Amino acid sequence: MASDFWLIAGLGNPGAKYQGTRHNMGFMCADLLAQRWSVTFGNHKGLAELGKGVMDLGPRRERFFLAKPLTFMNDSGAAVSSIVAYYRIQPERVVVIHDDMDLDFGRIKVKRGGSSGGHNGIRSIDRSLGTNDYARVRLGVGHSRRGADAHRQTVDWVLGGFGGDQRRQLPDFLARGGDAVESVILEGLDRAQERFNAR
Image (cartoon, rainbow, N blue to C red):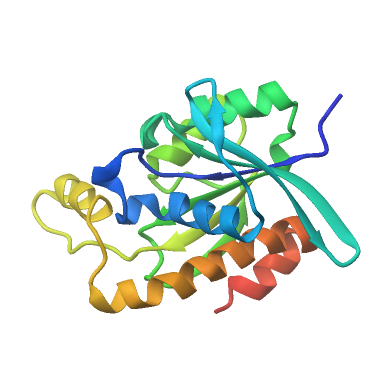
C-alpha cells in the first residue's frame, strides 16, 4: 500500500570540503527545514541522512521524510530510490531541492517533470526512479562566465562558495526555498508556482 508520507530530498555533496558551496544549496535548505520542523537526522542504509517530521499548519497536517543523500551528487538517485522503495512513497509525493545555474542567484522556480537541465543529481534521480514525475524546487545560483573550457569552469563554479553580498542574502533565500517546499506540500504545485515562479 502506498504511503501517505512525502519525501523531501535536498541535494548536495557530503563532507566538510563541500559545505557552503553552490552545489550544496539543497543540503542547506534541508537543514533549514530540519530546524523549522524539529527533524532529527539518522542514517538510512549508509545512503542518506534521513529524518521524519510533521508539517502542521491550520487545517493541513502532512507527514514527511527529509533526506540528504550521502552518495555524492552524481549518484543521488541511489539514495532517493532506496527511500522511496523502502517507505512505499509515490513519485508524485517527492520534492527535490537543488541548485540551478540557469536561474540567477535568488530566483526560485517550482516545477514537476521536464528535463534535468544538465544537473547530474536530477539525471541520476530520473534514471533511478524511472520517471521524472516529481516536484523540484530549483534554487538559482547563476552561471559561470563561459570560456574555452566550459566544463571545467562549470565544475569550479558549482563547487565554489558565495561572495560577500550573496552570503548576506543567503539566509533569506534559503528561507524562501523552504517556504516553496512547504507550499508544494500544503497548497499544491499550481499554487506554489504562482507564488514563487513569477518573482
